[in-house]
Length: 417
Image 1 (tube, rainbow, N blue to C red):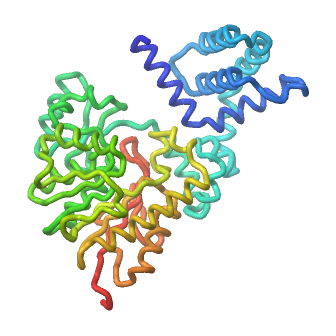
Image 2: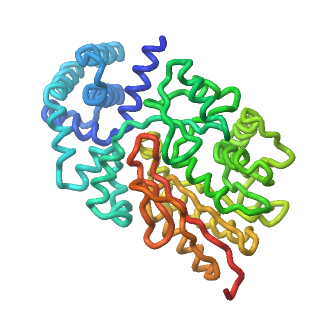
Image 3: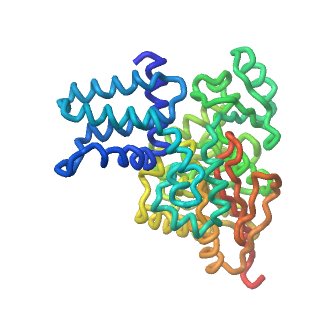
């Protein structure tokens, strides 16, 4: 593919994944009017063409709808589905005619299920969302989750002005953030390798929610080992290692692939591993740190519900069984973190989820087994910050550079205090 073709294909795929259930609902309503009772099941290629066509017609703003429809019809012919061409043509052209009005009906509907479909939320998850937020809060969240996401850059300490100059030199627009002193906001998404200064370790593509969460380690660290229990690709671990240039840091990761990526991330940031910064591959439920950590950063695996706008593919892989499995792992990891930390130590529990089942409920379970521990206040203020109920703090995705995050800072106190 050429770059313009690749850009169009990726935009179309993203458009499909953002609101897949809504597109199926819309084209499904036309199918019932255009197929006979004998047609019980659509061929997979026909289903895919209708899904791509509906998403492309209603999502893409700078593409000829007629050309898209004709291209999809040619695919049906090439795949031996000539008999389906008239129906597909009628459905897609009807959607092109009145789909925008139908979208607006979903957007303005007082029905929570309709609004969830419009926002791209799997309808089956509404039961979990209703236990987390009021209907009014969910309506607001559905609107915010439609804001086109933009990239933000974390400049290495003392390098923000230099990175800003590099951006200007490449004709890229960047604005300093007022939420985090190292952050630069871009006006669109970007491939990390195309960011000036990325290869040199001067800039890292990272959401501001992620930056804020990782910055809490610096806020609460005084001395001793910092343990990053689930370090992933090392983005937060790299931020912590740069900010605390004298602290011993150990990063654990279960996946060998992500562990390898974390090694590459540390090398890119010019952080030498094997000494002050240690990376180990293994299970955080069984690994043993070299000493009791004074701060534990637990960026727990989660549903990623706060990032569904930026990473829409994750929500369609979710199920009740996976949610229950994830919550069980979160409980085990947080209890393990409380066991590992030294007395007086800090555990920073982080998820990129907005579901209480993964946040306050997990903290409540951990505190029930460690009643001596206490949740501390997070030093954040602003319209993007909401208190948990009753523990922790939420970052709401009200800006293009923010994802939905939850943070709870727990101090492990001696028993009986």
